[in-house]
Image (cartoon, rainbow over all chains, first blue to last red; front, side, top):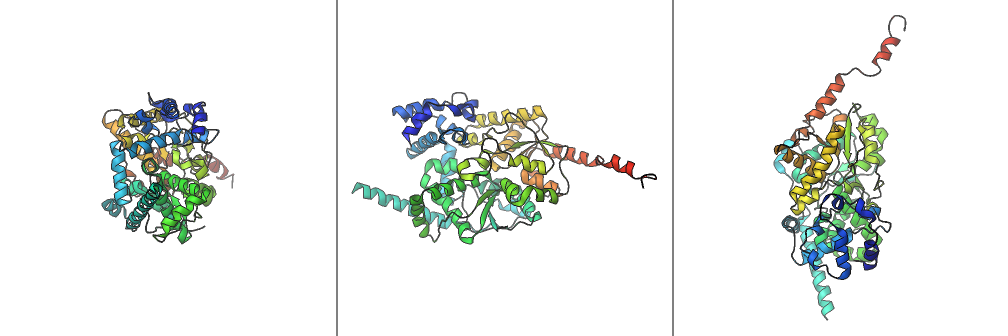
Amino acid sequence: MNFKLLEMCSKCGACYNICPSALNLPGYDPRAVIADILEGNYEKWLTHKSIWQCLECHYCLEICYQHYGFESAMTAMRTVATKKGIYPPQVKRGWDMFAKTSRLGEPALPARKKFGLPEPKASGADEFKRLMAILKESREKASSGEEK
Amino acid sequence: MKEFAVFWGCTIQTRFPFIEKSTRMVLDSFALPHRDIDGFTCCPEKSLVNNIDHAAFVVTAARNVALVDELDYDLVSPCTGCVSNLATVKCELNANPVEKDEVNSMLKEVGREFTGKAKLHHLVPFFHDTVGLQTVKQKIKRDFSGMQVALHYGCHMIRPSHALKNDNPLEPVKFDNLMAALGAKSLQFNTKLMCCGQGLDRIDEHENALHFARIKLKELKAIGADALVLCCPSCFLQFDNNQFLMEKEGEKFGIPVIYFTELMGLALGFEPEELGMNNHRVDCSPFIEKWEALKARPPKENGVQATLRGPSGL
């Protein structure tokens, strides 16, 4: 996360009148989250629903004169939270399914038949799993390198 | 036109196979060179995978793009999320050669290479820019003049704009132009570009998701929209399924939710049942019935033709 940009972001607020969550969800206030991140007090937000209420619509990014958008601070908070094992239950279920199957659901076969749709193409699941193993390995290598 | 692979995505194939059906019927009707290819996985979904593991997000998307890269195809999808996620990663890697090398060194071990040359399109801008609205106008059998629809762009069809570069991210026009080509009036209203809010259902905040759906549906009812037309399976889930759930609780809006491929299919002369529109949870028949009633109306030029013909008009 770029703290210089986030600090500039905290002094602006041009996007709060276009952010759908800020406009429609009472209690959702990205300013409070950003202020705490800049102070180094972000811990309390990791268990707070606010960091997940950012819908990643990218409005803040588009309207921002720096093309920055506070969403990147929210994404960072979510990543820190999930690294500590803090997830909304559905997010955890979705991630587990993705990691296990490479997809978020399998093609509905009886319905495909009913609509006369062709057989679904071969999945890339095996290759995906190998790729995830390679990623894990390269991370382990990098972290053991750091220790040395 | 360059051949292209269709990226169907998880949501359409898992939950809404009828959207795949109408999309195929439309692609075939326009005789577009679409292909199905082996090996795609989840795009993957940004709000889920990117939040948890950015590297997994990047390599998974890069691998999907590599599949079309090596066949020298482009990629087209009827799902906004898939295109946005794939384009985000493509843009990130093309802008960062070091990261691209790292990703490619991993992809090489499974025999793939991301070059980033494939073009990635959502179907709406694809029809607008590549097929062309003139072709759409020529091809359709019956237009929607007399019908007024509310468009929902779907955040990820047009944003992030640095990756998608396909329309104005704050004042988009291409979906509106496509509606105009189909002869439908696209209504202008306050919540037109408001995010659907389906993401709230994905973080176990169902009441807030309904709150978001309600805001838009209320306005659509007030302005007399004949249907909500959209281009994203998540938005479809939000407005069709959640509207149905509210209906069951006695809160009825009665706004048919129509995927743009279904609307195009109708214009091409297919029946609603062939397109699978009877599988929606919110009844589409008010829209269809109004359109059918318009069909019974004599064409506008009738009066003129009648006066020109006849004994003295030759």
